[in-house]
Structures are given as C-alpha cells and as structure tokens.
Image 1 (tube, rainbow, N blue to C red):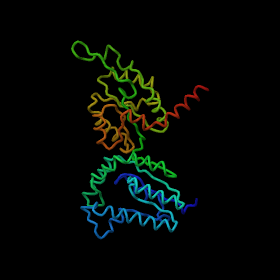
Image 2 (cartoon, rainbow, N blue to C red):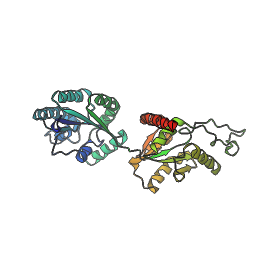
Image 3 (cartoon, helix red, strand yellow):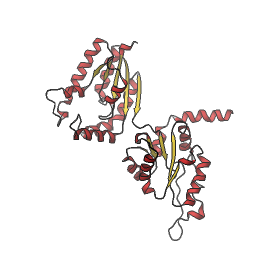
Image 4 (cartoon, rainbow, N blue to C red):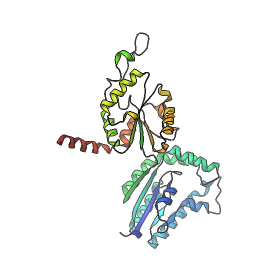
Length: 323
C-alpha cells in the first residue's frame, strides 16, 4: 500500500481538539482536507446563532467531497466527529473498497472540557454547536470508538490527560477501607489502636501503581487527623509502597479540604493541570477536584483504565521468581 492510499478519520467530541491535532500533526500539503465545519462556515445560509440548521446538508456535502477526492486517489483527512455510526462506517467501507488504508485518530477529551471550550466559542461568536449536541454525542462516544477500532487498519487514541503526575489517596484506595470502632463517647481513639499502621494493603492497585511509578510521578495525598496518624501512615507507605518518595507524601487535616490542597500543590510544584490525576474513593472529593480541570478517577476506574498493566505485572513476577 503506498502513501497515496492513506485516509485519516478523526474521532472525538466537538471541542475535543481534532482540528488542532490535524494542524500540528498532519502535513496538509500532502492530504486533502475535508471538514463539514469548514463547509458550514462558508455556506451562504450559515447563521452563527443557529449553526445546527444546515448541519445535515454540510455533512452530506463533506461526504460528497470525500468521494470525489477518493476518485483522485490522494491522501485525505476527514475532520469530523466520527460518532455517527452509519455515516462513518459507510465511509470506511467505501475507502477500503478503493484501496485505502484507514487510520482512525481518537481525541479522547473529557466532555466537561469540551463543553467549556464550546461555551467560550459561544461567548466570542466563534464556531460552536449547541451544548445538548455534545452531551448526546458523549453518550455514544465509547461505543463509537469500539466500532471504529474494530474496522480501522490503525487506531490511535490521543488522551487529553497524560496522568504524568498522580495523586493517590490512601484509605479505601491502596489501603483497605476500615470500619473504625468508636468509644463510648462516639469518638475514635487514634492514639491507642494503631489503626492506620495495621491496614491491609490493596495489592491490585499498589502493583499497578508500582509499574506506573517507572514513568510517572506519584504523590501520596491522604487525610490525617494528627501527627501520630501521619507517622503511622508514613510507616505503612514505606512498608507497602517504597517506590513513593518521602518528599512526595502529603497529609491534609480534613478530607473536605483535599481539593484545595491539590490545587495548592499543583501551583507550588509548578505542574500543568492536564498532567495531573487524583485517585480517590469518595465521590464528593472527586467532584470537587474535577472542577480544578485535572483528571479524577475512582479506584474502580483506575483498575479498568490500566487493565493492560496486569500483563506487565505478571512478567515482573515471573522474572523475580526466576531470579
């Protein structure tokens, strides 16, 4: 297959950064560029207050233009959402029938970020879509990505968040959640019971974090009511997670202020928000942290997100056994 038979199809929500990706990664002197959005902007009936009014016609014109370019046998890139199942699958079928190698590039940007970008476009009278369209497409995006991955010759996922800096909660994430006993006054005797140093480790999460620590920066961020508990937690971390550096262990007195501490740490450590992730088991904390513009994950999502690390852990275990 020669270079002239390559077709790149973009997949992602409106505002996810598909056009930016093309401009930064595709040499448009060697590709035909096809975009329903570009057609819409030059359409004589285009009304920026009601862009959806001519959307169907612009999609049809983009498809027609693509088929014309296919007849010329040149490379092409389709800057569309790729979420319309019938439309995109029919295009891929046509491309393959005409000898094209199809590359799908999935720009995986969270829906709330796409909505924020779209709202900014509305405010500045730039190209935008009704917010309800983005929300509707978000519900179909995962299934669309699976379908296109199954039929594409090459499927590339470009994640908005890099997870380069990972802040990890302790209790309920890497240490088993405990039902802590209360005394006769309804209080917790943290001093007498040694609660945190005896917590059982959640090895499935810890093992995956250990693999990630080879390429990512890990920070422990846990709530601790006093210095005794902090010392116990530090002792526990050194025992079960020695790959986390001592200088990367932080405690906050009240868990309700964890999102504020994350914000301060990002600022003090001079980190970029889109490189930061918080793994926590409490949904209230997750939602507060999400508003910071960082990646947030419940431990259940973390295990699914990094499912492929299981294979790496198995290899490491085998090597250790052999040694």
